[in-house]
Image (cartoon, rainbow, N blue to C red; front, side, top):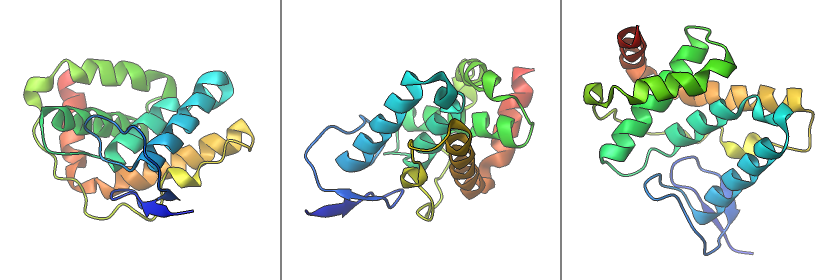
Length: 164
């Protein structure tokens, strides 16, 4: 089996031909792993509880090519993680936060992604564990990614402040 390493998160997966996201950058194997994780979250509400953290961590760890979609994505997902980790917003509110922040796209600008985010990635998630253990691992991964974006935390805080 030939393997390949995702350029942003560093996960080593089987080298396959397959789809990838239209603007987030990953290998097809990494994208497939993400799809498997999402499928598990969607099929069991106990795993879905931490779904927003999964979305935010993956998007920020695979920031993609420079463009308006990447600018929007990084601002929205970083603000969501800021709300959770700094403002102690409940998980159940993160989707609403993303929707509200997305309405303020005029305030967004390019957030230069961190150079190295490869120590922890979606490979740390195992869906063959209890939902509590799974969500614990998702939170650890999301915290790792969030801390890598520390240079832009102030921007995320300002987005939340403007939401009122």
